Image 1: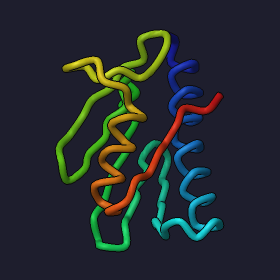
Image 2 (image 1 turned 90 degrees about the vertical axis):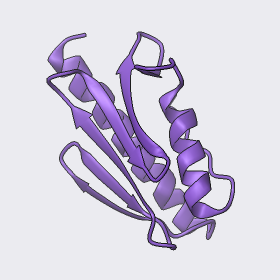
Image 3 (image 1 turned 135 degrees about the vertical axis):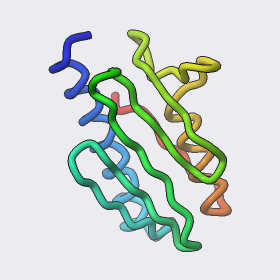
Length: 111
């Protein structure tokens, strides 16, 4: 993948996460504060817990840090796969967010 393709893909992921969080706020599902600076997106939950999604351009990876651990993902042509076990980025993000929120939350890849 080229650098420009990587940047476009990761920008779409971060924008999609922000859009989902904004929709949940509008629909009164949960109030998650989001803050984005370049390739770094922080999500702060009502209980003070945080999730950080961070791009890693030199490695062409997407990193996720949450209370339950740190995860590294690389695009495999179909989805962002965990570099350790092949797990899906959006599944991991959804699981971590649900744990912090105390309710089921679902993030999905943009179509």
